[in-house]
Amino acid sequence: MMAALGVFVGIDVSKDRLDVHVRPLGMGFSVGNEAAGHAALIARLRPLRTTRIVLEATGGYERALWLSLSEAGLVAAVVNPRQVRQFARASGRLAKTDRLDAAVIAPFAETFSPPAVRNPDPVADRLGEHVLYRRGLSEQIVALENQAQRLESAALRSRATLRLAALRAELKEIEREMAAIVADDRAKAALYACLVAFKGVGPVLAWTLIANMRELGSLTRHQAAALIGVAPINHDSGKRRGYRAIPTGQARGLKAHGGRTQVRNVLYLATLSAVRHNPAIKQFYNRLRDNGKAPKVALVACMRKRATILNATVRDHLATAKLVAA
Image (cartoon, rainbow, N blue to C red; front, side, top):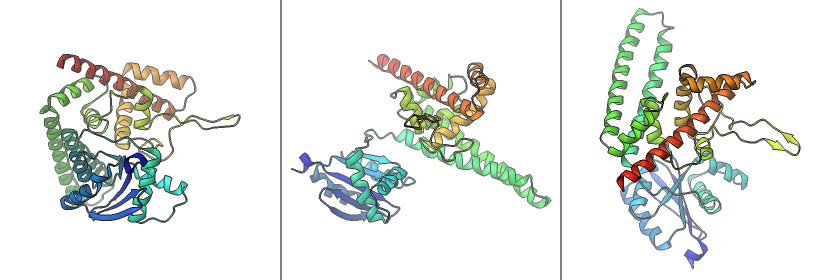
């Protein structure tokens, strides 16, 4: 009976606790966000033959739970908290607690049935941690460089110089570790070689794509652009035809908050360079500008073009690798 109706589980994840709601049973409970709590949760969910389990992405605190569920055969989807919050507002649920959030995630799971990820990738996960750590180091270096330019104290400038040297050395060490992670896995090494062979794709963009765009090669060109957050959205009403634009917000030099911010930011910087040094992208950008497109509109179009080409390149690479393996 339960399987026929469908059982949907929403889990609100925090550092130390998991708040769970099961729909349509109306059952709610909490367990600890550690191995014993995961085992207790799995024991309670397994007999229910769940249709969909949904977790909110919570800064990495959801990762161990997702792996535990996957290993137990209970495949879960991880969704953006912003989507769930917008769903809650649209449903008239303005109050927010962990227990209430879980009670919102369950109907969200039932309404949208977000796709679950079935294949954990420990190599990409490890690389992803390094990508995130490297980004933090880069931001510290930029912030300290900007601060050092305004320092009048010679002693403070000396401190800043020493600290910058240490941060840059650590950055190089992290990049060596990232290169080793990729080189030690045959499939990842081949994918990396495929990506960096594309003019304008350097190590940082390749590492970011491997870690945070694992669907690359299995998407349509529209899906690839949307996943990165550079697909234009229609703004039409009645007879009015509005501008096509990516979702508003703020991300580096671009206004956007749809899609995967980490990938978009790195692709943005790489495209800035490509517009200057890649003849094909430069020609495409200049043609758009000559046709009256604003600089950032033309730049986003270049990003979208590069995402499309990279997706097709990886798709061909994976198809070739599959044939060779067969």
